[in-house]
Image (cartoon, rainbow, N blue to C red; front, side):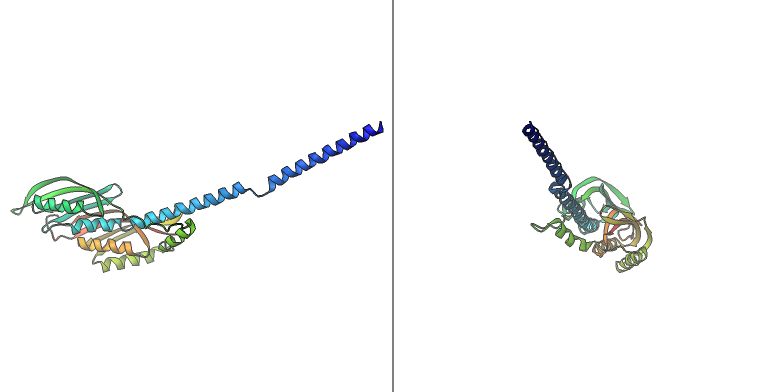
Length: 269
């Protein structure tokens, strides 16, 4: 009888120890490091760096888009032709101008078709006009800006190293007074008069800070092109989002123009 009771006691103790061991093992599993959790965290961080790198690459690809488009439109003009209005924006480009004759307008279109800065060039219409006894062809055309394309990333580069190189083009924040001086200096160097500067409200994006501004200038068409090229070359990362320019005297090929530029400065956060 005593042997049976002893065996039962031993069996109970064994079961108790087994249960305690299982509980300790489960507790250890619950509090130990999670390999899958750490891996997910690394993947999320890499994806975030990749998104930021793509954003900066996109901004760099667009910074000279407006300048390239206006240069293409003006440099392709045949002799005796001139532009009276250009509207550049996210939905495309509209251009109005005058040419001495339809054959010269056709030459202009051919050059625009061959431009690396423009795409989808379409003639919307032309009409013959007579001004002071001289005939001219007024035309309206549409196009879209072709992006310059971002520089290819280094083969095998990690998102962190790729972003480190890209962020060199993303300078620190600049106060509006320094920005105004820089834009005024650029206008004077380009041969323009800056007639208006209206900074917007600073916005904090996911990866960069942004400050929108409206800049109005007056001068020659070629001077506006020079200004846009200078804006794209500043250390500050400016992207022109909209451009609207009109000739002061549309019937005069030597007329000056007034331009309104909506641009956005991007800086590191």
